[in-house]
Image 1 (cartoon, rainbow, N blue to C red):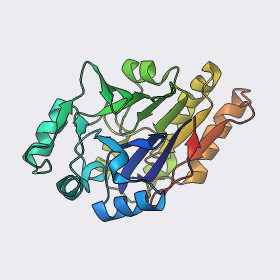
Image 2: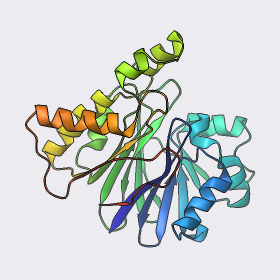
Image 3: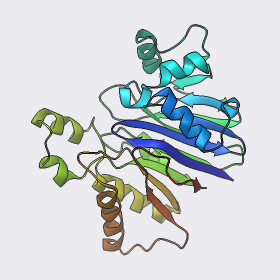
Image 4: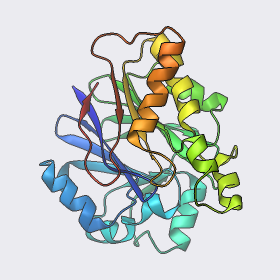
Length: 262
């Protein structure tokens, strides 16, 4: 059986982990190499079983630990072509590292079939749809200001969906951020609100998906209780009762979250 967790997930750093058997992939590495490696050790995972790292985009909360990690553990890295160019210009990619652009094709990464899809953010950014070696499917989409047609298409039919629930609109409007930053976050090229996330989860539940991880919660403009409360209120208002065994979990900001089997 396949599983998904996050080593950490929030505006201060993001790293997802998809595992099947002993083999696993990482999605982003937005905190230090030391923090990430220690988390992997805590889970009992060997670095030799890491098949590759998928990168969504170049913002620091998604790549902060990559330069040091790749220098010491040069595993294959996959990202959009624009993101690879940005990482190279930033000096993140060591000479000779195996890198592949992900656009327009499905890649075999250690037995995981990986397809990228674009997300609406203020730099080139992508989500990933991943078929595990045992035939399960998960999709992850964070850092998106709106749910576009490609996002809908790639989340649909997945056994597990990891989706951004970045901010509570009331908390954002009344919080300490300057006006321009509030506008950026709430824009079509910013981040996804709890309400937008909840509406999509309602749709996916009705299609049969039963595993959800709420990711990238803002420390200043959200809490796990607010995010989960919005989801369950949306479901209740629609008269939707999740099937027994359904998991809807808010991921932890600075700790390893509970493993979700799918």
